[in-house]
Length: 113
Image (cartoon, rainbow, N blue to C red; front, side, top):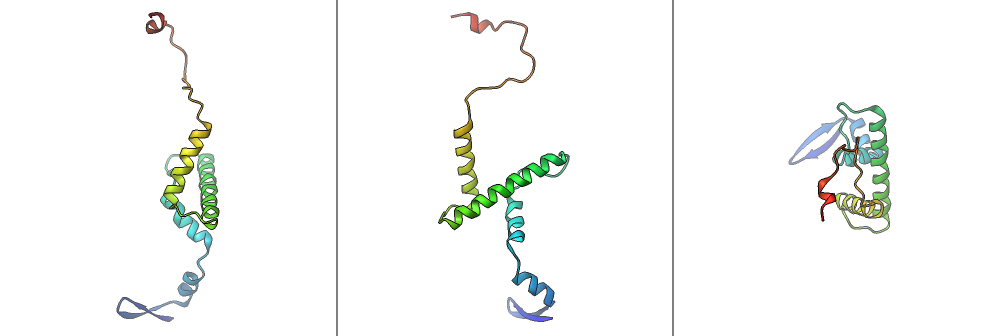
């Protein structure tokens, strides 16, 4: 047991807890940060979708870490919003894709001038 000061009093903590807290690595911090921006909730989703979105989250997190190492100043939320805007800007085709079978009646508004 080790003595630590909590607020104004001394408390004892197990040595293993102190060792873990002192050596808490990047994986624990990554999991902690990803939890705030989780894309998909676990309830009722297919396993492959959960795996894909987790890998996607990790890729975005890794790109954020590289961005910060290169001198970026934005928060993770600002970085994610910037990323979303630029992906939509680059890959949005402007076309609306309609699902399902086309209607059998002609569109009367299209036939009038």
